[in-house]
Image 1 (spheres, rainbow, N blue to C red):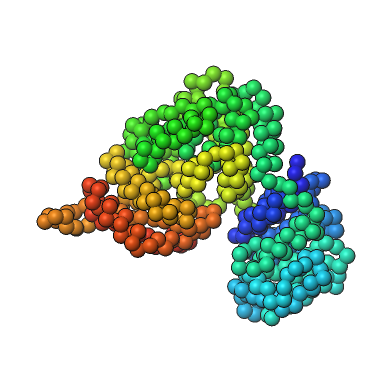
Image 2: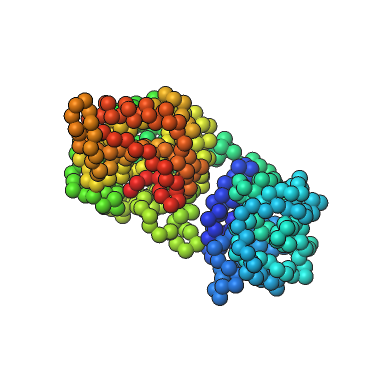
Length: 509
Protein backbone atom coordinates (compact mmCIF):
# COMPACT_ATOMS: atom_id res chain seq x y z
CA UNK A 1 0.00 0.00 0.00
CA UNK A 2 1.32 3.50 -0.80
CA UNK A 3 1.70 5.97 2.05
CA UNK A 4 -1.26 8.31 2.21
CA UNK A 5 -2.93 11.34 3.70
CA UNK A 6 -6.38 10.88 5.18
CA UNK A 7 -8.89 13.65 4.42
CA UNK A 8 -11.96 13.70 6.66
CA UNK A 9 -14.90 15.41 4.99
CA UNK A 10 -17.31 17.55 7.00
CA UNK A 11 -19.34 18.47 3.90
CA UNK A 12 -17.27 21.25 2.34
CA UNK A 13 -17.69 22.06 -1.34
CA UNK A 14 -13.88 22.26 -1.49
CA UNK A 15 -13.01 18.81 -0.07
CA UNK A 16 -12.30 17.26 -3.46
CA UNK A 17 -10.06 20.23 -4.25
CA UNK A 18 -7.94 19.46 -1.18
CA UNK A 19 -7.47 15.93 -2.47
CA UNK A 20 -6.59 17.14 -5.96
CA UNK A 21 -3.93 19.50 -4.59
CA UNK A 22 -2.39 16.74 -2.48
CA UNK A 23 -2.37 14.37 -5.46
CA UNK A 24 -0.65 17.07 -7.55
CA UNK A 25 2.22 16.76 -5.07
CA UNK A 26 2.51 13.06 -6.08
CA UNK A 27 1.16 12.03 -2.69
CA UNK A 28 -1.73 9.59 -2.44
CA UNK A 29 -4.74 10.59 -0.35
CA UNK A 30 -8.25 9.33 0.36
CA UNK A 31 -11.44 11.13 1.38
CA UNK A 32 -13.80 9.69 3.99
CA UNK A 33 -16.89 11.15 5.67
CA UNK A 34 -15.99 12.37 9.18
CA UNK A 35 -18.56 9.92 10.59
CA UNK A 36 -17.15 6.94 8.70
CA UNK A 37 -13.40 7.36 9.15
CA UNK A 38 -11.29 4.21 8.85
CA UNK A 39 -9.01 2.99 11.62
CA UNK A 40 -5.49 4.35 11.48
CA UNK A 41 -2.96 2.15 9.71
CA UNK A 42 0.80 2.44 9.33
CA UNK A 43 0.52 3.84 5.80
CA UNK A 44 -1.39 6.96 7.02
CA UNK A 45 1.13 9.80 7.34
CA UNK A 46 -1.21 12.65 8.27
CA UNK A 47 -4.82 13.82 8.55
CA UNK A 48 -6.59 16.85 7.05
CA UNK A 49 -9.94 17.98 8.49
CA UNK A 50 -12.03 19.72 5.82
CA UNK A 51 -14.26 22.76 5.96
CA UNK A 52 -18.02 22.53 6.37
CA UNK A 53 -21.23 24.51 5.83
CA UNK A 54 -21.99 23.76 9.50
CA UNK A 55 -21.03 25.70 12.63
CA UNK A 56 -19.55 24.39 15.89
CA UNK A 57 -22.20 26.59 17.54
CA UNK A 58 -24.96 24.34 16.14
CA UNK A 59 -26.61 22.10 18.77
CA UNK A 60 -25.64 18.97 16.84
CA UNK A 61 -22.47 20.10 15.09
CA UNK A 62 -20.52 17.40 13.21
CA UNK A 63 -17.60 16.07 15.24
CA UNK A 64 -15.50 12.99 15.90
CA UNK A 65 -13.07 11.66 18.48
CA UNK A 66 -10.03 13.85 17.79
CA UNK A 67 -7.91 12.02 20.38
CA UNK A 68 -7.36 9.17 17.92
CA UNK A 69 -5.28 11.55 15.77
CA UNK A 70 -3.95 14.49 17.79
CA UNK A 71 -0.42 13.97 19.03
CA UNK A 72 -0.14 10.68 17.14
CA UNK A 73 0.47 12.06 13.65
CA UNK A 74 0.32 15.47 11.93
CA UNK A 75 -3.14 17.06 11.65
CA UNK A 76 -4.23 20.09 9.59
CA UNK A 77 -7.68 21.59 10.19
CA UNK A 78 -9.00 23.76 7.35
CA UNK A 79 -11.64 26.39 8.21
CA UNK A 80 -14.33 24.34 10.05
CA UNK A 81 -11.66 21.75 10.89
CA UNK A 82 -9.64 24.50 12.61
CA UNK A 83 -12.72 25.82 14.45
CA UNK A 84 -13.65 22.29 15.57
CA UNK A 85 -10.25 21.62 17.17
CA UNK A 86 -10.23 25.02 18.88
CA UNK A 87 -13.81 24.63 20.14
CA UNK A 88 -13.28 21.11 21.51
CA UNK A 89 -10.16 22.23 23.42
CA UNK A 90 -12.01 25.06 25.15
CA UNK A 91 -11.48 27.90 22.69
CA UNK A 92 -14.19 30.39 21.75
CA UNK A 93 -15.77 30.41 18.29
CA UNK A 94 -18.21 33.26 17.60
CA UNK A 95 -20.17 34.56 14.62
CA UNK A 96 -18.06 36.85 12.45
CA UNK A 97 -19.00 40.53 12.78
CA UNK A 98 -18.94 40.63 9.00
CA UNK A 99 -19.07 37.38 7.04
CA UNK A 100 -15.51 36.88 5.84
CA UNK A 101 -15.68 35.75 2.24
CA UNK A 102 -13.08 36.48 -0.41
CA UNK A 103 -9.45 37.49 -0.60
CA UNK A 104 -7.42 38.58 2.43
CA UNK A 105 -3.70 39.12 3.02
CA UNK A 106 -1.49 37.53 5.64
CA UNK A 107 0.06 40.51 7.43
CA UNK A 108 1.65 38.43 10.20
CA UNK A 109 3.33 35.07 9.59
CA UNK A 110 5.57 32.95 11.80
CA UNK A 111 7.87 32.11 8.91
CA UNK A 112 10.07 30.00 11.17
CA UNK A 113 7.20 27.55 11.59
CA UNK A 114 7.43 24.67 9.11
CA UNK A 115 3.85 25.15 7.91
CA UNK A 116 4.64 28.66 6.65
CA UNK A 117 8.12 28.00 5.28
CA UNK A 118 8.68 30.12 2.11
CA UNK A 119 5.30 31.90 2.44
CA UNK A 120 5.58 35.69 2.14
CA UNK A 121 4.11 38.53 4.18
CA UNK A 122 1.16 39.93 2.25
CA UNK A 123 0.38 36.60 0.59
CA UNK A 124 -3.25 36.45 -0.62
CA UNK A 125 -5.46 33.78 0.97
CA UNK A 126 -9.11 32.87 0.38
CA UNK A 127 -11.53 33.22 3.28
CA UNK A 128 -14.98 31.61 3.30
CA UNK A 129 -16.50 31.44 6.77
CA UNK A 130 -19.31 32.83 8.89
CA UNK A 131 -17.62 32.08 12.24
CA UNK A 132 -14.37 33.33 13.74
CA UNK A 133 -12.03 31.80 16.32
CA UNK A 134 -12.13 34.62 18.88
CA UNK A 135 -10.03 32.96 21.59
CA UNK A 136 -7.68 29.99 21.30
CA UNK A 137 -7.05 27.51 24.13
CA UNK A 138 -4.05 28.02 26.42
CA UNK A 139 -1.90 25.35 24.74
CA UNK A 140 -2.43 26.87 21.26
CA UNK A 141 -0.37 29.64 19.65
CA UNK A 142 -1.31 31.98 16.78
CA UNK A 143 1.11 31.61 13.85
CA UNK A 144 -0.59 33.78 11.19
CA UNK A 145 -3.04 36.70 11.06
CA UNK A 146 -4.74 38.93 8.53
CA UNK A 147 -5.87 42.51 9.09
CA UNK A 148 -9.36 41.41 10.17
CA UNK A 149 -8.72 37.81 11.37
CA UNK A 150 -6.32 37.52 14.31
CA UNK A 151 -6.41 33.71 14.35
CA UNK A 152 -5.80 33.02 10.67
CA UNK A 153 -3.64 30.04 11.69
CA UNK A 154 -2.62 28.34 14.92
CA UNK A 155 -0.48 25.47 16.19
CA UNK A 156 -0.85 23.22 19.22
CA UNK A 157 2.30 23.62 21.28
CA UNK A 158 4.46 20.52 21.27
CA UNK A 159 2.43 18.86 18.48
CA UNK A 160 2.38 18.87 14.69
CA UNK A 161 -1.27 19.93 14.87
CA UNK A 162 -2.34 23.00 12.91
CA UNK A 163 -5.49 24.94 12.15
CA UNK A 164 -5.94 27.48 9.34
CA UNK A 165 -8.98 29.70 8.86
CA UNK A 166 -8.46 30.10 5.09
CA UNK A 167 -8.63 27.66 2.17
CA UNK A 168 -5.18 26.85 0.70
CA UNK A 169 -6.70 24.44 -1.82
CA UNK A 170 -8.41 27.10 -3.96
CA UNK A 171 -6.38 28.90 -6.60
CA UNK A 172 -7.26 32.30 -5.08
CA UNK A 173 -4.86 31.45 -2.23
CA UNK A 174 -1.70 32.42 -4.10
CA UNK A 175 0.73 30.33 -2.06
CA UNK A 176 -1.74 27.69 -0.92
CA UNK A 177 0.08 24.92 -2.75
CA UNK A 178 3.30 25.83 -0.91
CA UNK A 179 1.49 25.54 2.43
CA UNK A 180 0.01 22.16 1.51
CA UNK A 181 3.44 21.01 0.31
CA UNK A 182 4.92 22.10 3.63
CA UNK A 183 2.34 20.07 5.54
CA UNK A 184 2.31 16.96 3.36
CA UNK A 185 6.00 16.75 2.43
CA UNK A 186 7.96 18.48 5.20
CA UNK A 187 5.70 17.85 8.22
CA UNK A 188 4.11 14.50 7.28
CA UNK A 189 7.33 13.36 5.56
CA UNK A 190 5.59 11.92 2.48
CA UNK A 191 7.98 10.76 -0.25
CA UNK A 192 6.11 12.14 -3.32
CA UNK A 193 6.46 8.85 -5.16
CA UNK A 194 2.83 8.31 -6.16
CA UNK A 195 3.00 8.67 -9.96
CA UNK A 196 1.05 7.44 -12.98
CA UNK A 197 3.82 4.96 -13.75
CA UNK A 198 3.74 3.62 -10.21
CA UNK A 199 -0.06 3.38 -10.35
CA UNK A 200 0.02 1.39 -13.61
CA UNK A 201 2.64 -1.03 -12.33
CA UNK A 202 0.86 -1.62 -9.02
CA UNK A 203 -2.63 -1.84 -10.51
CA UNK A 204 -1.69 -4.30 -13.26
CA UNK A 205 -0.04 -6.55 -10.67
CA UNK A 206 -3.09 -6.31 -8.38
CA UNK A 207 -5.46 -7.07 -11.28
CA UNK A 208 -3.43 -10.14 -12.24
CA UNK A 209 -3.73 -11.42 -8.68
CA UNK A 210 -7.42 -10.51 -8.37
CA UNK A 211 -8.61 -11.86 -11.72
CA UNK A 212 -6.26 -14.77 -12.37
CA UNK A 213 -7.54 -16.67 -15.43
CA UNK A 214 -11.10 -15.41 -15.07
CA UNK A 215 -12.95 -13.79 -17.96
CA UNK A 216 -13.99 -10.14 -17.66
CA UNK A 217 -16.58 -8.23 -19.69
CA UNK A 218 -16.53 -4.44 -20.06
CA UNK A 219 -18.84 -1.99 -21.79
CA UNK A 220 -16.80 0.52 -23.79
CA UNK A 221 -18.22 3.99 -24.45
CA UNK A 222 -15.49 5.61 -26.53
CA UNK A 223 -14.69 7.89 -23.61
CA UNK A 224 -11.58 8.31 -21.49
CA UNK A 225 -12.58 6.33 -18.39
CA UNK A 226 -13.76 3.10 -20.01
CA UNK A 227 -10.84 3.18 -22.48
CA UNK A 228 -8.19 3.53 -19.77
CA UNK A 229 -9.89 0.89 -17.59
CA UNK A 230 -9.92 -1.47 -20.59
CA UNK A 231 -6.22 -1.00 -21.31
CA UNK A 232 -5.23 -1.56 -17.67
CA UNK A 233 -7.17 -4.82 -17.55
CA UNK A 234 -5.88 -5.79 -21.02
CA UNK A 235 -2.31 -5.39 -19.76
CA UNK A 236 -3.19 -7.69 -16.85
CA UNK A 237 -5.18 -10.50 -18.52
CA UNK A 238 -4.96 -9.98 -22.30
CA UNK A 239 -7.61 -11.76 -24.37
CA UNK A 240 -9.58 -12.77 -21.28
CA UNK A 241 -11.01 -9.24 -21.38
CA UNK A 242 -14.10 -9.06 -23.62
CA UNK A 243 -15.17 -5.53 -24.56
CA UNK A 244 -18.60 -4.64 -25.90
CA UNK A 245 -19.25 -1.35 -27.68
CA UNK A 246 -22.98 -0.71 -28.13
CA UNK A 247 -24.34 1.61 -30.81
CA UNK A 248 -27.41 3.08 -29.14
CA UNK A 249 -28.18 5.29 -32.13
CA UNK A 250 -27.38 8.35 -30.03
CA UNK A 251 -23.66 8.64 -30.70
CA UNK A 252 -21.98 11.39 -32.71
CA UNK A 253 -21.82 11.15 -36.48
CA UNK A 254 -19.76 8.11 -37.64
CA UNK A 255 -18.59 7.59 -34.05
CA UNK A 256 -19.46 3.91 -33.86
CA UNK A 257 -17.24 2.98 -36.81
CA UNK A 258 -14.31 5.28 -36.00
CA UNK A 259 -14.12 4.41 -32.29
CA UNK A 260 -14.49 0.69 -32.98
CA UNK A 261 -11.59 0.92 -35.42
CA UNK A 262 -9.38 2.79 -32.94
CA UNK A 263 -10.03 0.17 -30.26
CA UNK A 264 -9.01 -2.65 -32.58
CA UNK A 265 -5.78 -0.79 -33.34
CA UNK A 266 -5.12 -0.76 -29.57
CA UNK A 267 -5.19 -4.57 -29.54
CA UNK A 268 -8.41 -4.82 -27.53
CA UNK A 269 -10.79 -7.74 -27.97
CA UNK A 270 -13.90 -5.71 -28.97
CA UNK A 271 -17.31 -6.59 -30.33
CA UNK A 272 -19.52 -3.87 -31.79
CA UNK A 273 -23.29 -4.26 -31.35
CA UNK A 274 -25.80 -2.32 -33.45
CA UNK A 275 -28.80 -1.84 -31.15
CA UNK A 276 -30.16 1.45 -32.54
CA UNK A 277 -33.66 0.17 -33.18
CA UNK A 278 -34.09 -1.18 -29.63
CA UNK A 279 -33.17 2.19 -28.14
CA UNK A 280 -35.37 4.16 -30.55
CA UNK A 281 -38.32 1.89 -29.71
CA UNK A 282 -37.80 2.34 -25.97
CA UNK A 283 -37.55 6.13 -26.37
CA UNK A 284 -40.58 6.54 -28.62
CA UNK A 285 -42.92 9.20 -27.23
CA UNK A 286 -40.80 9.96 -24.13
CA UNK A 287 -40.17 13.67 -23.45
CA UNK A 288 -39.23 13.76 -19.75
CA UNK A 289 -35.40 13.84 -19.42
CA UNK A 290 -35.37 11.49 -16.44
CA UNK A 291 -37.58 8.94 -18.22
CA UNK A 292 -35.33 9.13 -21.28
CA UNK A 293 -32.23 8.47 -19.17
CA UNK A 294 -33.87 5.54 -17.40
CA UNK A 295 -35.08 4.00 -20.66
CA UNK A 296 -31.60 4.22 -22.16
CA UNK A 297 -30.04 2.70 -19.03
CA UNK A 298 -32.56 -0.15 -19.01
CA UNK A 299 -32.05 -1.05 -22.67
CA UNK A 300 -28.28 -0.82 -22.37
CA UNK A 301 -28.34 -3.33 -19.51
CA UNK A 302 -30.61 -5.64 -21.53
CA UNK A 303 -28.35 -5.49 -24.61
CA UNK A 304 -25.18 -5.78 -22.57
CA UNK A 305 -26.52 -8.72 -20.55
CA UNK A 306 -27.58 -10.51 -23.73
CA UNK A 307 -24.11 -10.08 -25.24
CA UNK A 308 -22.33 -11.03 -22.00
CA UNK A 309 -24.26 -14.32 -21.88
CA UNK A 310 -22.82 -15.24 -25.29
CA UNK A 311 -19.37 -15.40 -23.63
CA UNK A 312 -18.90 -18.60 -21.61
CA UNK A 313 -17.91 -18.48 -17.94
CA UNK A 314 -17.65 -14.71 -17.50
CA UNK A 315 -16.98 -13.97 -13.83
CA UNK A 316 -16.41 -10.20 -13.70
CA UNK A 317 -17.91 -6.95 -14.94
CA UNK A 318 -15.36 -4.13 -15.34
CA UNK A 319 -16.49 -0.53 -14.89
CA UNK A 320 -14.77 2.80 -15.50
CA UNK A 321 -15.88 4.20 -12.13
CA UNK A 322 -13.64 7.08 -11.02
CA UNK A 323 -13.05 8.62 -7.60
CA UNK A 324 -15.68 11.41 -7.70
CA UNK A 325 -18.32 8.68 -8.27
CA UNK A 326 -17.09 6.85 -5.17
CA UNK A 327 -16.99 10.02 -3.06
CA UNK A 328 -20.53 10.91 -4.14
CA UNK A 329 -21.78 7.47 -3.08
CA UNK A 330 -20.42 7.82 0.47
CA UNK A 331 -20.79 11.54 1.09
CA UNK A 332 -21.37 12.96 4.58
CA UNK A 333 -25.14 12.99 4.23
CA UNK A 334 -25.42 10.09 1.79
CA UNK A 335 -25.55 10.62 -1.98
CA UNK A 336 -26.47 14.17 -2.93
CA UNK A 337 -29.97 14.98 -4.07
CA UNK A 338 -30.53 13.67 -7.58
CA UNK A 339 -30.00 16.32 -10.25
CA UNK A 340 -29.98 13.68 -12.96
CA UNK A 341 -29.62 9.91 -13.05
CA UNK A 342 -26.18 8.45 -13.61
CA UNK A 343 -24.60 5.08 -12.98
CA UNK A 344 -24.40 4.29 -9.30
CA UNK A 345 -21.25 2.85 -7.81
CA UNK A 346 -21.80 -0.89 -7.58
CA UNK A 347 -25.19 -0.36 -9.24
CA UNK A 348 -25.18 -3.73 -10.99
CA UNK A 349 -28.50 -5.49 -11.61
CA UNK A 350 -28.78 -8.58 -9.40
CA UNK A 351 -29.71 -10.80 -12.33
CA UNK A 352 -26.28 -10.36 -13.97
CA UNK A 353 -24.57 -12.27 -11.12
CA UNK A 354 -21.12 -10.84 -11.87
CA UNK A 355 -18.43 -9.55 -9.54
CA UNK A 356 -17.35 -5.95 -10.16
CA UNK A 357 -13.81 -4.76 -10.85
CA UNK A 358 -13.14 -0.99 -10.93
CA UNK A 359 -9.43 -0.26 -11.57
CA UNK A 360 -9.86 3.54 -11.70
CA UNK A 361 -11.96 4.03 -8.58
CA UNK A 362 -9.19 5.91 -6.73
CA UNK A 363 -8.43 8.38 -9.56
CA UNK A 364 -9.69 11.82 -10.56
CA UNK A 365 -10.36 12.53 -14.24
CA UNK A 366 -7.06 14.33 -14.85
CA UNK A 367 -5.21 11.42 -13.23
CA UNK A 368 -7.03 8.96 -15.49
CA UNK A 369 -5.65 10.87 -18.48
CA UNK A 370 -2.11 10.72 -17.04
CA UNK A 371 -2.46 6.96 -16.62
CA UNK A 372 -3.76 6.74 -20.19
CA UNK A 373 -0.66 8.52 -21.48
CA UNK A 374 1.53 6.12 -19.52
CA UNK A 375 -0.34 3.29 -21.27
CA UNK A 376 0.33 5.07 -24.61
CA UNK A 377 -3.35 5.52 -25.47
CA UNK A 378 -3.81 7.92 -28.39
CA UNK A 379 -4.58 11.57 -27.67
CA UNK A 380 -7.66 11.32 -29.90
CA UNK A 381 -9.24 9.26 -27.10
CA UNK A 382 -7.54 10.83 -24.06
CA UNK A 383 -8.21 14.38 -25.22
CA UNK A 384 -11.82 13.67 -26.12
CA UNK A 385 -14.39 15.97 -24.57
CA UNK A 386 -16.72 14.36 -22.01
CA UNK A 387 -19.85 13.04 -23.68
CA UNK A 388 -23.02 12.22 -21.73
CA UNK A 389 -23.88 8.56 -21.20
CA UNK A 390 -27.39 9.00 -22.72
CA UNK A 391 -25.70 10.62 -25.72
CA UNK A 392 -27.68 12.89 -28.01
CA UNK A 393 -30.96 11.88 -26.34
CA UNK A 394 -30.49 14.59 -23.72
CA UNK A 395 -29.39 17.12 -26.33
CA UNK A 396 -32.66 16.67 -28.19
CA UNK A 397 -35.28 18.45 -26.11
CA UNK A 398 -38.54 16.56 -26.29
CA UNK A 399 -39.18 13.20 -27.93
CA UNK A 400 -36.53 11.28 -29.87
CA UNK A 401 -36.84 10.20 -33.49
CA UNK A 402 -34.18 8.89 -35.91
CA UNK A 403 -34.73 12.00 -38.05
CA UNK A 404 -34.03 14.37 -35.13
CA UNK A 405 -30.89 12.37 -34.27
CA UNK A 406 -29.73 12.66 -37.89
CA UNK A 407 -30.21 16.45 -37.87
CA UNK A 408 -28.38 16.89 -34.58
CA UNK A 409 -25.52 14.60 -35.63
CA UNK A 410 -24.89 16.83 -38.65
CA UNK A 411 -25.03 20.04 -36.60
CA UNK A 412 -22.77 18.59 -33.92
CA UNK A 413 -20.29 17.32 -36.52
CA UNK A 414 -19.96 20.76 -38.10
CA UNK A 415 -19.43 22.41 -34.70
CA UNK A 416 -16.85 19.91 -33.37
CA UNK A 417 -15.00 19.65 -36.71
CA UNK A 418 -14.62 23.42 -36.87
CA UNK A 419 -13.37 23.56 -33.28
CA UNK A 420 -10.66 21.09 -34.25
CA UNK A 421 -9.79 22.81 -37.53
CA UNK A 422 -9.54 26.20 -35.81
CA UNK A 423 -7.28 24.87 -33.04
CA UNK A 424 -9.91 25.66 -30.41
CA UNK A 425 -10.91 22.12 -29.44
CA UNK A 426 -8.29 21.67 -26.70
CA UNK A 427 -9.17 25.06 -25.18
CA UNK A 428 -12.73 23.84 -24.55
CA UNK A 429 -13.59 21.36 -21.80
CA UNK A 430 -16.86 20.23 -23.39
CA UNK A 431 -18.84 21.26 -26.44
CA UNK A 432 -21.95 20.13 -28.23
CA UNK A 433 -25.16 21.16 -29.92
CA UNK A 434 -28.75 21.08 -28.67
CA UNK A 435 -31.80 20.57 -30.87
CA UNK A 436 -34.59 22.63 -29.36
CA UNK A 437 -38.31 22.05 -29.83
CA UNK A 438 -38.58 25.69 -30.94
CA UNK A 439 -39.27 26.58 -34.55
CA UNK A 440 -38.68 30.04 -35.90
CA UNK A 441 -39.46 31.96 -39.04
CA UNK A 442 -36.63 32.41 -41.50
CA UNK A 443 -35.97 33.30 -45.12
CA UNK A 444 -34.04 31.11 -47.54
CA UNK A 445 -33.87 32.32 -51.11
CA UNK A 446 -37.23 33.90 -51.78
CA UNK A 447 -39.15 31.57 -49.47
CA UNK A 448 -40.19 31.86 -45.85
CA UNK A 449 -39.15 28.92 -43.68
CA UNK A 450 -40.43 27.64 -40.35
CA UNK A 451 -37.71 25.38 -39.06
CA UNK A 452 -35.72 24.34 -35.99
CA UNK A 453 -33.53 26.40 -33.69
CA UNK A 454 -30.29 24.77 -32.56
CA UNK A 455 -28.13 25.98 -29.67
CA UNK A 456 -24.36 25.62 -29.47
CA UNK A 457 -22.77 25.04 -26.06
CA UNK A 458 -19.07 25.24 -25.18
CA UNK A 459 -17.68 25.49 -21.65
CA UNK A 460 -14.37 25.72 -19.85
CA UNK A 461 -13.90 23.74 -16.65
CA UNK A 462 -11.44 21.66 -14.63
CA UNK A 463 -13.68 18.78 -13.59
CA UNK A 464 -17.24 19.67 -14.61
CA UNK A 465 -18.29 20.52 -11.05
CA UNK A 466 -18.37 24.17 -12.09
CA UNK A 467 -18.07 25.58 -15.59
CA UNK A 468 -18.00 28.87 -17.45
CA UNK A 469 -19.21 29.49 -20.98
CA UNK A 470 -16.38 29.65 -23.47
CA UNK A 471 -15.65 33.00 -25.16
CA UNK A 472 -15.31 31.63 -28.69
CA UNK A 473 -14.38 34.21 -31.35
CA UNK A 474 -17.32 35.90 -33.07
CA UNK A 475 -15.85 35.12 -36.48
CA UNK A 476 -15.70 31.43 -35.62
CA UNK A 477 -19.30 31.39 -34.40
CA UNK A 478 -20.44 33.26 -37.51
CA UNK A 479 -18.73 30.73 -39.81
CA UNK A 480 -20.15 27.75 -37.90
CA UNK A 481 -23.66 29.22 -37.88
CA UNK A 482 -23.49 29.90 -41.61
CA UNK A 483 -22.29 26.38 -42.39
CA UNK A 484 -24.98 24.75 -40.24
CA UNK A 485 -27.82 26.73 -41.79
CA UNK A 486 -26.53 26.15 -45.33
CA UNK A 487 -25.84 22.43 -44.97
CA UNK A 488 -28.36 21.03 -42.47
CA UNK A 489 -31.88 20.76 -43.81
CA UNK A 490 -34.44 21.61 -41.13
CA UNK A 491 -32.38 24.25 -39.27
CA UNK A 492 -32.72 27.97 -39.93
CA UNK A 493 -31.44 29.56 -36.71
CA UNK A 494 -28.37 29.05 -34.49
CA UNK A 495 -27.97 30.51 -30.98
CA UNK A 496 -25.04 30.33 -28.52
CA UNK A 497 -25.51 29.45 -24.85
CA UNK A 498 -23.74 31.93 -22.53
CA UNK A 499 -24.85 30.41 -19.20
CA UNK A 500 -22.40 29.28 -16.52
CA UNK A 501 -22.66 26.37 -14.08
CA UNK A 502 -24.07 27.16 -11.59
CA UNK A 503 -26.83 28.26 -11.96
CA UNK A 504 -27.21 26.39 -15.26
CA UNK A 505 -25.89 22.88 -15.89
CA UNK A 506 -23.58 21.92 -18.77
CA UNK A 507 -26.22 19.80 -20.48
CA UNK A 508 -29.70 21.17 -21.07
CA UNK A 509 -31.39 18.00 -19.76
